[in-house]
Amino acid sequence: MVAACLLFAWQAGPAQGAVTAGAAPADGAALGNDISWPQCGGDLPGPPAFAIVGVNGGRPDTVNPCLSAQLAWAERTSDATAGTPAAVYVNTAATGPVEPLWWPAGNTYQGKDVGNPYGVCDGSASPACAYVHGYAMALNDVAILKEAGGGERRTWWLDVETGNSWLWDKAANAAELEGMAAYLQSAGAEVGIYSTAYQFGEIVGAINPGSNLSGLKSWLAGAESTSTARELCGEVPLTPGGMVALTQFTDGDLDYNYRCPGAAPAPAAPLPVPPPDPAPLDAYAAMHAAQIA
Image (cartoon, rainbow, N blue to C red; front, side, top):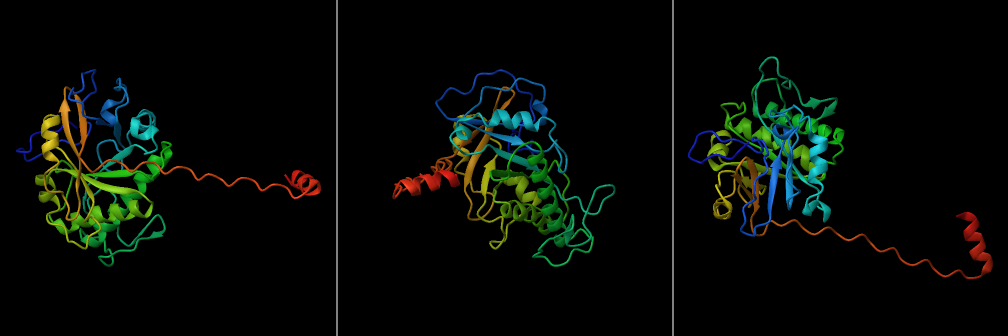
């Protein structure tokens, strides 16, 4: 979605505008783009410095029908060709036990026991059940990405917006995100949060320092240009102990993302150099080795 002004009570999320051929802001910044299902069938820009691709079709537990093609485009970005897989984002929501949507009635999903810091889920709109629901949604998202040909070991952004369904209990909403983060982290992924301070406060409120959301990176919407995106890097992160890693603004119909100082990806580790083969001791040893090979 196109980023909107922070003064509004609602905020559009990543990649909700149609991509058109527009000039990127010309101030020398290395910018990225985020895209998703609204860009299906449209022309994508030349691969930028980095990219973020939406896994879902606008709501949790739905599928971006162009995910495979968009991942292939994102893997041609500068970061990806240097060894850092393109990031993805997923929609989030905590619906509670509302028909016809699935909601857990216990601490299992697809036959897998879910370790639950909130106790036993009883099918209610409780933090215990929200945690299991979030865990299940993240598990489904990883399956969706694998089906599209992508691996889970990359940065996953949790898209937290008032436009999706949330419970009145902020503790349950926080538990939903904690469950998602727990599954993704167990799969070897890095997790961050996309939102605005207003929306995150309305949905989740203050985060307990002991929460697994503490220390996560923030991706903030609401900038209007490269310069205001830089300024947004100085805002307070969404969770305690975290950092503002990315900020988002719109130019024309395309979302741009500015990487804040200190948030550059770590360089890809070089492959280990195998030791040289030892010299054969004699002709017999060399022949014997060749026969074994």
